[in-house]
Each structure stands twice: as structure tokens, then as C-alpha cells.
Image 1: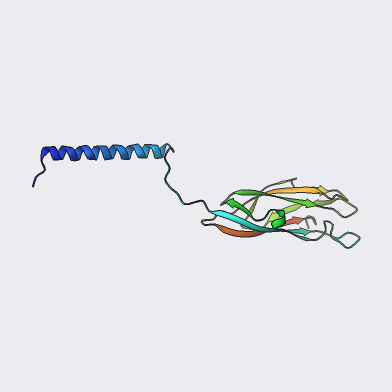
Image 2: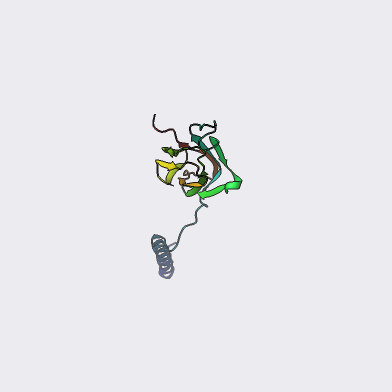
Length: 162
């Protein structure tokens, strides 16, 4: 059965309104005013950091900077939770217990983390007898699809190029 002219006009009117609303919504989305819902961003939880120092020994038989392995845990503010691919800063106090200045030549971090920056830049010297030399670094967390936890190892090399 054919549609009456009145009913046909009603349908054309409704389709025109629907098309106008759709175009209006697309313009709002394109302008960034209206955003589509997304899943919450993935996070990276950094549970701990182990600092390894490649160093020599002083006349007393101790490492120049004390123990060659230092652990950063809850007492140091861990765990850190950052967004996937986000950055966070770690600080470490270095003490030089030797009678001479010693230099840190290289700083590395275990994947999946990468180094964003560190202060001071390498090489840097820690003066003899220094107890509170501050080393600060910014690490970049890995990009993950879902929330994950990691620990990392940071190595400070004071033995220099071989």
C-alpha cells in the first residue's frame, strides 16, 4: 500500500531532524567539546628500585660509596603509580667514604624503563668525604595496554671506561 503524502512528509521531516542532530554531534566531537567515553588509562606501578654501584674499594676494604647494592622501597616512597608512559623522579643520596674524589661515568636503567634525564649529568664527581651528594633522575615508565607492576635496577658505574 503506497504511503500517503502527509505520512511521507512526516518521515522526511524526521529523517532531516535525525541527520541534523547527527551532524551537530559530529561537529561537537570534532571540535573536542564532546568526547566519547574511553576506558580508564592504564597505570604502571613501580614497586621498588635497586641501585647497583660498580665501584672500587677504599683502603678500609669498603666500597667507595658504601654497599654496592642499595634498595629503594616503601621507606623511599615506593610504590610509585604513574600513567602508562608517564614519568617519575627518583633521588639518591651518595656518600663517598674514600680519601679521594670519585667519578660516576655512566648511569643506566633496566628495561622496560628508560632514562628521561638526570642531574648532575655524567660524568660527575662525588667529593671525598661527601655524605649528602644528591643524584636525581627522571625515569619514563613503559607504555602498557593494561595496568602492570614492575621493579627496576639502576646502575651507577664509577669504574669508568675500560
